[in-house]
Image (cartoon, rainbow, N blue to C red; front, side):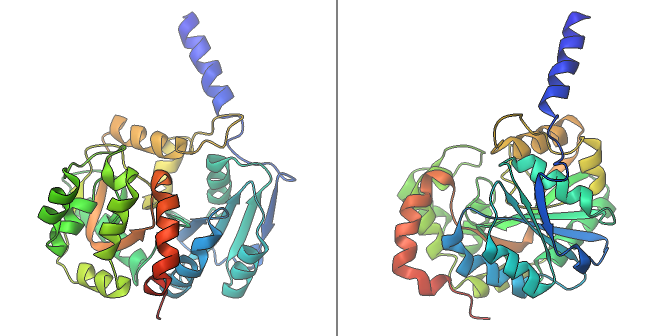
Length: 309
């Protein structure tokens, strides 16, 4: 009995900052809200060095029939505000750096959206990415074998889908020979910790739009993910978010990774699958341990990452 009471108090404390209150955030562009059935959240504010490469792709690849909200946790960016205004999007900036709270607040503000796309600022999106993810989710649902919790695209720098990406490129054996492994997991293996591995895989990913076309040309297929999954590019239903009580926010910390941990655990505990759609493609610049080495390399090959239109 005492344990149950203490557990309830801990959960209540953990979620106290689940939503930002008025005065704790700046909200711009809600007059542009389309009140559509789908919301795209772009979580951004800390990797400005990537914006010349990632943001033009969001501008070009996101359709007009979705609401888009750029969300900054603990920072306000004039550049992001201007980008949102230019495209008829909204901009939400929280005073505190509370990642889950920022996302929960955005989802709560766009009440009409039953479908939520979430992308990080270091994700390179490809044409028709939203429709490919939506169609994939609906086909899994229609098939009836699994109850989908969320779906994501094939991503090059990702602990799960990099293997299928390299197989598609005919480079899996070469990768294994160079880095001594070809394991699928959520954790600190080469594809998530080694800058040289990220560079090597990115070299197979360029020119980006042509590679994305090759992936998109595949017949539809998908794979359930059997381990923790990185949520830099995902689609899920509002009902999932409601059922799990929103993304859990740890009080007093930004909560980096807590949203990922929470949704992965919830999907596992409720028998909802995390699925990768193999004919949808995104690039991921790098994981944190790889970022410094990748930034130095980006300076050398910046033209290869630029969006040609």
